[in-house]
Structure formats: structure tokens, C-alpha cells
Image (cartoon, rainbow, N blue to C red; front, side, top):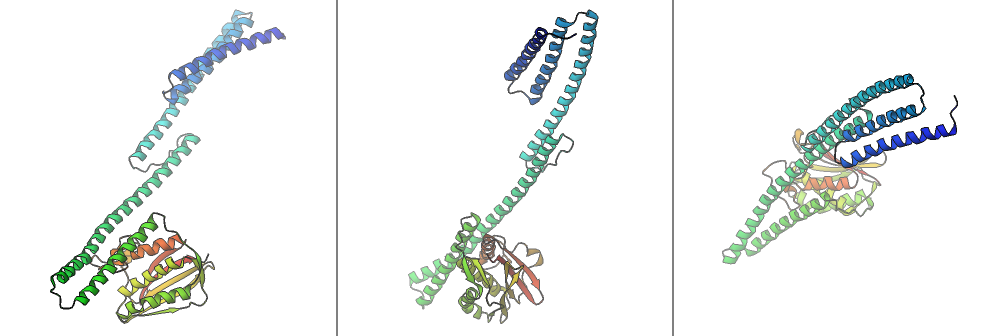
Amino acid sequence: MILGALDLVIIAVTALICTSVATGAAVLVMQLNRRGSIGTHVAALICATIVAIVASTVAISIEMYLSSHDLQVLLSVIAVSALMAGLAAGFLLRRLRRSLARLQHAARQIGSGEVVTADVESSREFAELSGQLAQSSAQLAAARAEVEQLDTSRRQLVAWVSHDLRTPLAGMRAMAEALEEGVVDEPAEYIRQIRDQVDAVNGMVDGLFELSKIQSGMLKLSKEPVVLLDLVSDVVSDLQALAATRGITITHAEMTDQVLYADPGELSRVVSNLLVNSIRHAPENSEIQVSTHHLDGDRIVLTVLDQGPGVQSHDLGRMFDMGWRGTQARTPEADGSGAGIGLAIVRGIVEAHGGQVSAAHVPGGFRLDVTLPTM
């Protein structure tokens, strides 16, 4: 039998009314329970869908069917289908609640500082979200470990700097009191020593200020073409007097036309700190050699090689850390190196240039390498 236009209109209007009523009821339930779980919202939508289909089918069947037997058969089929659909929806909601519960548990674990693993048993979307949470937890754990390490280094640095400042300040106070009381045979010598101590304290303060700029990201580089031979020659000339006090000779080799794009002032500080470190720990009457070579065409390696024993092998990875000292009894120097600042400044400046630093034991000595990009 072919349905007429009026019959089609009646079917459409009936389906629209039933579906609208069911959908409106679901929206009302979700609005009243807006702070409820996502499971209750999904359940409301599923129930509304089933009710809309069943109600529309039953209503249209009552309007259109002529045989009560056929109507009973259809109602039986609809009842069974609705029951099975409800069971399937309940199974889906149960899986959804389990996945959400696992995500909530993972979030609580991350909040307490734990590292979580990805949940691979959930559906793709939940598995991807769980994987992102696992990755975030690992990153947060690494960040917390880095912060704890930096905090420990800062506390050690403050303690060491406080101790190192106390020594020259106590000496200056004692010499000033002696001058004030007039019990000094050679006042000029005391004044010279006070001036040296002031220079040492100024050096430490300058080093701390430089390190704070590096760590806070406030270090501004003014890059320009730098001829390494000229820069190293100037630094070596400035340090000749210090090296001569220990009978040490500084030589430079393999430096002809090496040019790189860098901040000349900061790079001079790098070379100076490395050489001061070598002068302080190399054997007396020995030689320190500064050399360079190209690496992969677009990088230059600056090497400071001395004949000293260097640091212990287990300290190679720590010697450029803030506050690190080779020995607890080291006396502070004018550049602040004795407080564990000099080599930390070296690493900060080099990394700001896009380079890296390293140290290694070699036959007959100890080598410090600075790798820098040419541009």
C-alpha cells in the first residue's frame, strides 16, 4: 500500500513530537544535574534516544497498523531491542566510568608528585589522554628534580659565599683596627692588603651578579666577529703576572685565522676563568696550552690543556655546576672562583652562545673544551 501525503505528514509530526519530548526531558535532566558526573549525562542522552525511538514507533504503529496481532509483535520486538540497547549502554557507561576513574587516580598521583604510566586498556581517546598525563608526570618529576638540585646548589653557594666573605671581611676589620690604634709599623703594607681584600670581595660580588644574570636569562649578548688569536692573546697577557707567581708558562697554538660570531667581552671572561682555573691547579713551573680546531665546519673547539691531575673522574660532570668546589678548603680568589662560581659562569656564557663545555683527563694532563658555533 502506498502512503499518501497526509499519512507521511502524520508520521513525521508524530516522530517529531515524541523525539522532542524525549530530548527536552533529557536536556532538563542534564540542566538540573549540571554538576553531576558525565556518566549521568551520557545515560540521560542514551535513555532519551531509546525512548524517542520506542515512543515514535509505538505511536505511529497505533495510528497506522490495522491488525492488533501485528502491533503486539512489533511491541515485543521493540521491547527486546530496547532492553538489549539498554544493556549495551550500561556496559558502555561502565567502561566510561572505569576510564574516568583511572584518569582521576592518575591526576591525583601526579598532584602528589608520583610518575604515572599510560593506560593502554581504554579507548583511543582516553589512552591518548592517559599517555599525555604520563608524559607530563615524567616531565614534572624531572623539573622537580632539577629545581631541588638547583635549590641545593643555591643553599650550598650561599653558605660557601658567606664563609668566604667572612674571611676577608674579618681580615680587613683586624687591619683597620690595628691602623686605628696606631700599632702598625708599616701602614702602607696594611693598606695594600686591605685593598687586595676589597678587590677579592668585589670579584666575588661581580661573579655572583654575572651568575644571577645568566640564571635569570637577563644576560644580553652583543655579538660581533671575534678573532680568537687576538682575544686569547689579550687574556694571556693579562694573566701573565698571575702565572709567573707559580712559574707557569701559557702558550697558544693553532690559532691563525679562526673567527667566530660572539660577544667579545663575555668570551674573554670564559677564557680568563678557564686559564685562572688551570693556573691555580696546574703544577708549578709547568705549561698551559691554549689551542683551537674546527669541528664539523661550523663549530670551533677552544681547548685549555694543563699538566695538572684535574678533578676526580666522578666529578667531571659536576665541575661546571653552580657552587661546586674541588675541595672544601679552597680559598676564595678575586674572580670568585673559589666560591664555585667561575666555571659555572663559563658554562652559562657558553650555553648562551649556543655552545657547550666539557672536561676530560688526557695523558699527562687535564683538558677543558669549549665548543662554540661560528655564527
